[in-house]
Length: 168
Image (cartoon, rainbow, N blue to C red; front, side, top):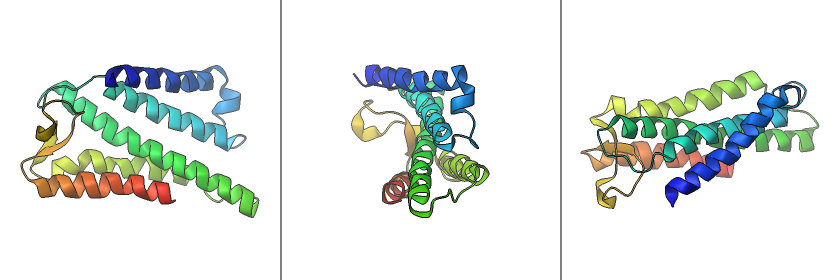
């Protein structure tokens, strides 16, 4: 059922991405329609992450597992950051009657911060794989011999960014 839900979510996100390509004047013009552009970027991130999740539960050590971990550890946080910035920009527009952040700076933050999650296993004795506790019923993520490493990178940073985005 998880694979089917991932495919369904990817199709829905792809419909928004396709709409942007069919009507670029309306969706891909950040200076004229910044909110449509941000929605399109969120859809791109969700589409790519959902495609990775649609791989199911690949075995640790395979290319599919590494690919899945890298893609979803990058694009889900990017999606959360874009969504938070969309809400922040909307708040600024309502309260201050103008947008505060330039799209260039939003791109920097939303594309660079997720690189931390992808490169984190390279700085430790860990890598990408499934959680041993779940017996092959999980998507690939950080994998390592030291539970402290997983706790620091996955629980604090990955979930921390999600929590900060919720508070933002």
